[in-house]
Each structure stands twice: as C-alpha cells, then as structure tokens.
Length: 168
Image (cartoon, rainbow, N blue to C red; front, side, top):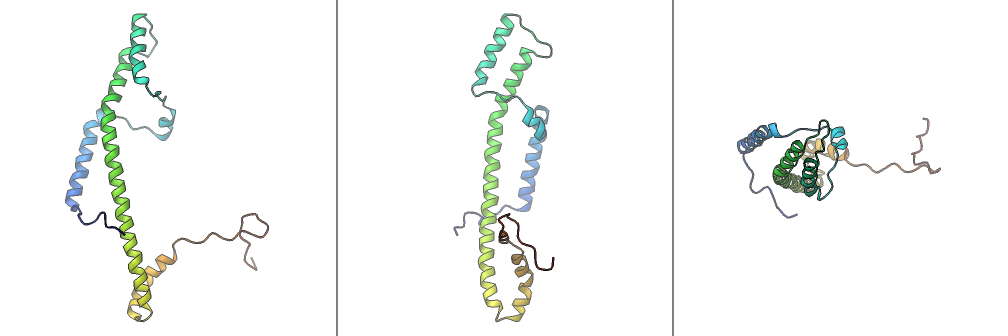
C-alpha cells in the first residue's frame, strides 16, 4: 500500500489551535447564519437553477407595479439573495476543506488498518511457536474474531430465516 499520509503529522497543539480558529470563525459568522433541523431543511423552498437572475426582475416588477404582500418585502428578498451570494464562496471553500480533511482521515485510517492487519497476520503465524506472544496476542485475536460474520444460511423453506437449533 502506498504511504500517502502519516509522514507529516501536526502536533496536538497545532490541531487544537486550528480547531480554535475554526470555532472563532464560526462565532464570527454566527450573526449571519442559522442552523436548521433536518425537518426544517427539508421544508425549505428550493430555488431553481438560474433563479438568482429572476429575483431582481421579480423585485423590479413588483416595485414598478406597486405589488405588495403582507410579510413579504422586495428589500428583504434582495437582502436574502445578497446573503446567499456572499456566503456561497465561503461555503464552497469550507466544503472543499471538509472533503480534504475527511479524505485524509479516511486514507490515514486505511493505511493504518492495512499495516495493522499485515502485522497481525505475521504475529499470529509466529504465535504458535511462542507461548508468551500467543498469550499477549489473545485480546487482538478476540477482537478480530468479533469482526464481520457471514450471514446465516437461508432456511430450506426460503423464508430467509435461519433454522432454529435443535432443542429450541
């Protein structure tokens, strides 16, 4: 396996400082942002692709023709559009950083686990000839024994359930 990550690791203090910086950035942006629940997110009205261009036209037409609605203002509509347009590049940059961080964590875990399983295989082959190693390796063997299991065989009747053990 290629070693893509892990040769350069930030200190715990460096990471703590970056986390503090990110939290400070979140605090700085808090007055301009909201957090929606999953239900609220699902209930939002979604803007159609290209809708940004239509917003200004609708606003201008509403003002020109004196169209007003209770609790709906052209100024509020335009302010919402401006907020969305100004925050979009930041959201995109943060999303790219998040993807990069998640990819790095995934790759580091993959490389780490690959090395772990390779070393475990070698240790387990040697353990039979070394009682001390065999004893020390038991918790690891138990962990790997608790890993993925094969799905139970389907019952002969095809219900998808495994047959009950005798005497049950």
